[in-house]
Image 1 (cartoon, one colour):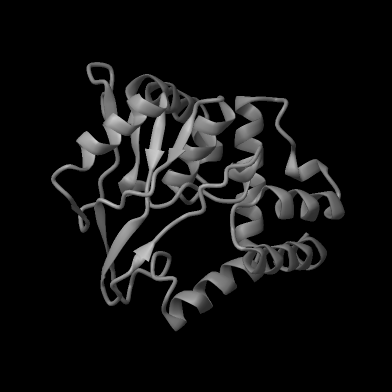
Image 2: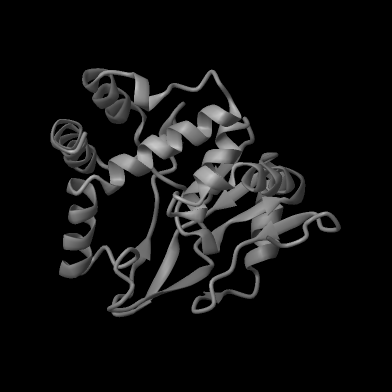
Length: 215
């Protein structure tokens, strides 16, 4: 990871995306005004689709256990908590290496540590959508099929279990998904996910399926 000790802010960057000229000034100014530690925003998709891809800003106590904070290429973070995240990642490499999304992992750490995360609506990143970008291309038939397969083959459930274990290593008071029964897990997902209710329902069905047939 990058050396963040001599900087005030850290941002993630993907090689095939574009940033508007005022992106960092705007986001850092928002962090200062809102007294927050990290920010994420919607993205302007380009390539196959040209629309805004956004995340719900409705944070709950445990939303970070079920999803991330959007595309990592929009993240701007204060350097001090990012340095803590980097050190935590090094110490917990064995479990973290099995967690798929670095941006979701970042969100887990910041929220579990009690740092303030800001969802801002100013989209100043152009995010490339293409045929091979199945995770990002949620608008395509292949993208939808890919996401459903991840839900019902146990992959998403395993990531949620890892998210919970990682979060519990940061704060032992956080609920352990592994040690609650199916009903309480579904209730937690419904009340703490930021996704649309239709997506929560599908996620809940997939988790029940995985607990029954994949365990």
